[in-house]
Amino acid sequence: MEGEGGEAKVAEEATWRDSKLFSEAERVALEYAERVTYTDQKVDDALFVRLKQHYSEAQIVELTAAIALENFRSKFNPTLGVESQGFCMIAKR
Image (cartoon, rainbow, N blue to C red; front, top):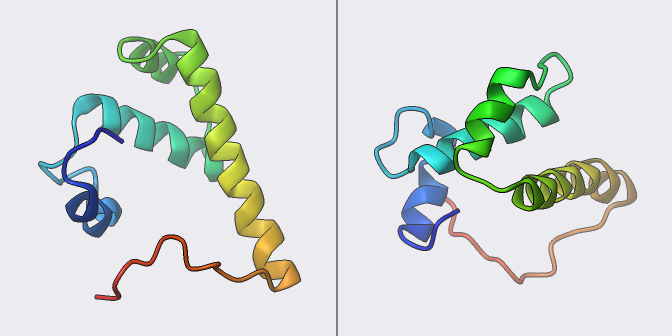
């Protein structure tokens, strides 16, 4: 995500569609991440058109790789009991 508003954006990530903190580029990236992640959703041509308005093809590939890696971690780590190493501590609400 873009450089400003880090912790505030993390706090509003669950409501990114309604939050004023996210740019249009961030919103389309988050929508893309959701569609890649949820098996009942599809990434269609219309979403790729919107992605290409904000990101180059190389950036879309990198974004896709980052999403895929996090999806991998979300399945791999809990299954094998891999816990946080404490590098990114976010205070609980």
